[in-house]
Length: 205
Image (cartoon, rainbow, N blue to C red; front, side):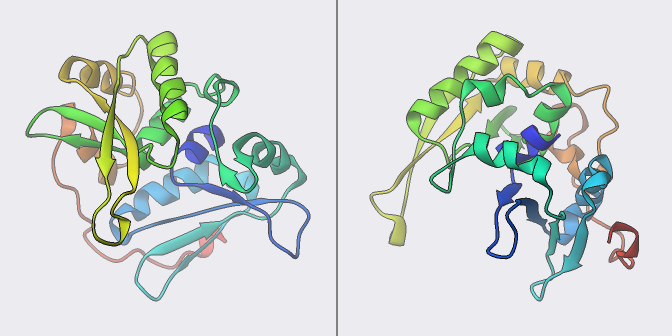
């Protein structure tokens, strides 16, 4: 779960007040159920969850010595990176978390995309090979060019053709996926919005 989360939206960060890192991330109110799902999977890390002024939710674990191995694996000079040693640690559950964090499904063209834009082109190739070798799923590397203040900036991301999208999503069919995230899967694509604002977060502190 940690490996998949760190490939997605989660960060491992060291502060000036602790020699050990902590995990932290954020989600909008529409994904609060998913945030709770991840916190419960990793509840031993003693999370704090709080609503921010913009209405989104921020969550962070306590600092633990055991998290140093993740920091050392994922960060090079403070920048998140990826290598095959990391990817080989990602099992089916980790892949699900990674996809729910950074993946998207376009119903119009029945394709999925994985926002891997924080990684270099060479790292994209490593990820592409990982999907091919471990899961027998082919992904294409696409280019996105920045606009306005990002003019001249180039990002990369992975695109899964229709047949490969189906193979990817079929890996997750037996998981009990949070309702608010089911719109990302071809076999249960619909809009999911919360009926009300979540109650107090005492259970997760």
